[in-house]
Image 1 (cartoon, rainbow, N blue to C red):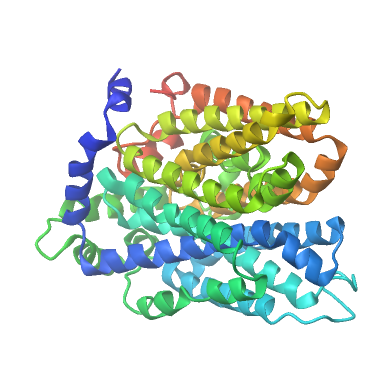
Image 2 (cartoon, rainbow, N blue to C red):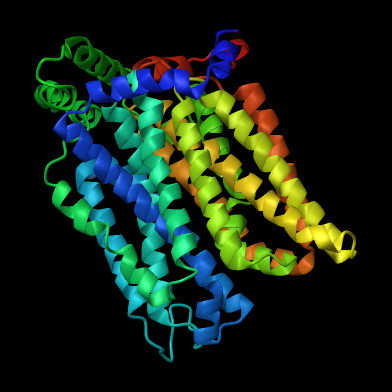
Length: 486
């Protein structure tokens, strides 16, 4: 009943509390850390949004076939899989900040590789039609996204107070939607090479700030640098703040986890029975949006609009605005209504969007209601992106970053990231071929997945709002399943 009451609370009533809470933790190191993570998410969004508006331009300039461009679109997810394989171990080994430096190298190299791509007689996959620098740039971007998709939410949840963790993490991830939306819009007026150059601009902000942001206090505790934990917390919370309880909770729980290791600290420790529930939740939440068609909608929006008679320029601009509005609303509500409630609303909206898209294709194929088919198609895409922006774009990773103890967090991040990356790769590469097989059937498949996802969230996903990371992780390590949705 408490959750229902919170769900009915208006965003405006929570805004003063949210703004007040943010102002209380707005120390310089915290603001700089938030800025770096937000810019990183923005770049990831730019990468994700790059291929949709540039599809026709790249295919025309380079004379690519559908299969050639599908390779370019899906090679991003190959890179994401590679990044997912190393993300957990890398961040545990060298720390959160050093990993950010590595990510920036991948992103910058990727943008310039695409921007200055030239025709060659050989390519990454030995296909003479495809420019190898174009493929390589997209692959490097994928590796960067694969690592940052895990690192960004993990870092923000580890440095943010519990009462603001959801809102701050969502706000940071909102910039991914902003980046994607901006590139959707810019892609209608800017050439694909120039758009790649613009993608490198945010690093003029990110790189200088990396010298001034603190390491995660929980990572410091994990690697035995206990003396630095209090110093970092003071810099994040302010010199006048009382951080003794928070620091002690972090140190005590880290010590408790180490005592429970029983000599088993390898990757496969994650697959012990006590982690089965949290692993199922994390993997399912990360994979659901991808299997539900997100990669298809994001990478091949131009194909959807073209097939249904919607103006691509108008469609991209309105899609960008709606997705951004959904993300803003989700950020305002995540610490009010909670993660679980927003996930349910988001999945329900995604289901309706996929179903309406399938209906629009069905009507077009049978030449029924020809005057309204394009309108229905546009509305369905807008509903999908608004719903995705509301919760499924950010909250799955927020939940995944909250529920795993420090001793298995790296391994869990790798497994969750792999699940999402492989799902994204399968959908991204097969999407155009599925459309050629049956446009209606493709989106009915996506609607089925999102419908099943709604049931999964309703039955199994618990609420994590308002709890410390240590409380959440203790709950999941030995969860009473009968209370899993309380």
